[in-house]
Amino acid sequence: MAELNPHFEKLPKTYIFPIIDEKLDAMRKKNPKKEILNLGVGDVSLPLVPEIAHAIQDAVLEMTKAPRGYGPSEGLPLLRETICAHEYAVFGMTPDEIFISDGTNADASSIQELFSDRNTVAIADPTYPVYLDANLIAGKSILLFPTTEEEGFIPRPPKEKADLAYLCTPCNPTGVAMTREDLRQWIGWAKENDAILIIDNVYSPFIFSEEVPKSIYEIDGADEVAIEMRSFSKAAGFTGLRCGYMVVPKTIKQGKLHAMWQRRTSAKSNGVSYPIQKGAAICYEKQTAVKLKEQIAIYQASALSLRNALTEQGQTFFGGVDSPYIFWKAPNGVSSWEFFDQLLEKSQIVAIPGSGFGSCGEGYIRLSCFLPKTTATKATHALHRLFTTT
Image (cartoon, rainbow, N blue to C red; front, side, top):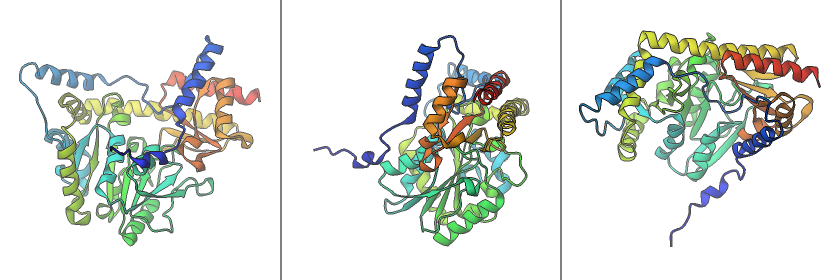
């Protein structure tokens, strides 16, 4: 008899996004003429840069003249070499330590396959859900450690022993970015516990504070304990195209992890499509890179507008400086869902209840700052109206 995976029963029974969709449908039926401002799902809102689209188009047309079948499972040499030259060669990395994938969500859920079921995985609360869900499905032991307002939502190494730890910096959902000193503590913890750090660094393009490193490998010893994940999704608007990459240094575990991930990739992937990888490679050319920085600057300006509106009203919030997310504490002690309903009803703003990211997110909501200027302006006006009418 085929037995089902019992670990699926450990997953949270409710998933917040269907509930949000139901509430949105009800609002649209009730007020069909009112514009709803979606500051919920962290998706890009600016058009794809033309140079990227042209590169993808040219690659597709190239395939009409000569066949392009299966590519290397770990990614095209062109893209791996380009990423390495622009981002990782300075740390002594080589192109073969970089693996191309269809996005960080897949990498974050798959990397745990390299580790024994007997391992304990440390995950911050609140957290990006895929870290917890993937490890629960795999049957691993979970050590949830709290991040709190008192600590500024900075994750601190737990006192308990663990074998793996997931860290998202800049963080989704809290918007908080870890400093060099914060990350040094984690590197020390990893070495002390013979543990591995899984660093989700997809929001690195939003970092501009000097004390916040753009890569974990800026810190001595990181290449001995840390795997870093990045993506073109938020940096270049690839959320609908799917392309990411992960660095697995050969200096971790005497190269065993690198060899295992290479073998796993060859077994489970036929690679990201050729046109998408060609589009990703063009992101590093000067003209394209300038335009991508301009788009990031628009999102950063939207974050600043929202931060200013909340600051003027004396609100407590985190993030929005080195990240595209703001974690806003619900006024008057109301719950995350109660505040969600208030925002939707009174301001037509959609946010994400913080409780959907873990118990320590209760009493907060997450605002996405992936907004064009016009939407950001409307949102700040809506926030001002919210405070003047309550």
